[in-house]
Image 1 (cartoon, helix red, strand yellow):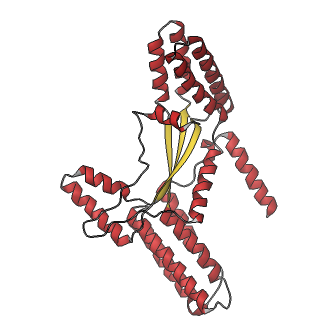
Image 2 (image 1 turned 135 degrees about the vertical axis):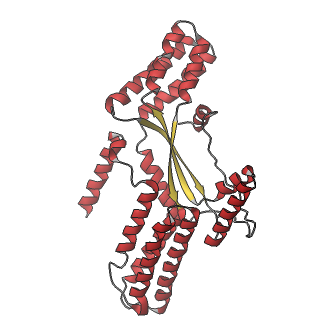
Image 3 (image 1 turned 90 degrees about the vertical axis):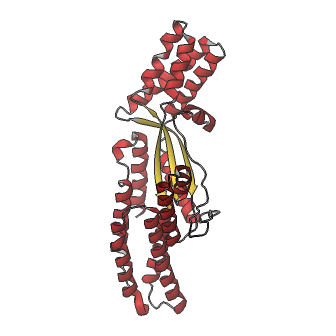
Length: 326
């Protein structure tokens, strides 16, 4: 889908900030943008985008393109071509509804944007206090700019057609054209295009980094006869995980109470691996707590019932392949 068309459709009704401003706290240094996240984080973002792209419905994409085409033809005075485009759009939407009668949103485009800063948890806390000071001083523009930069995340945006209203809105345009009400027809098409829905999926980078550190730490913790270098690496990975959790907490990804058990469980792991001790299952409790934290922040995974049947079938196929491989 042409991104210019999407931007045109959303103009005046939706806006997205695709850049960040450097964080400035009164008592701290500027928090510069990290030039690029590491490969594993990029892979995580790519996985989420690919997961959402599987849900894109080709017929819905065609319907949207033909809606734009119909508007273009009307503006050029080509009423017959506009009617043909609307007929194609209507037919494609009828196919979508027939195949997915319970589907509320038909995905047509997926994009992702990364926001990141390099900072300590203390610097983030200082910046949060500065936001409060600016708000209390009535300086909303500065507070808004600073607050918007206080994030470290990948945002996956899914643009969809609302199936409860969009098909009927398109059908209602044809009678207007037949009646010679071209200006009204164009206004109706623009109104329909303005109803596109953006669903945001947020992936906190500090939690991804904590997960990555814990994966490495777990491998080391299970190794018998670790050497001194490996012991230092294990300790370092546990420290990195804790630092990233503190960052996630400072950014507000979850409540403070949700993080208390995680720090305690990290201390338990440190005790279990101290003095070169090793074993399996040391990280099970912490990983379970991390999953509960993520579910608490974003409500867990998307219910399968909300996914197009095609995406569900592909997902089941992948699960079957994994099962066979195991």
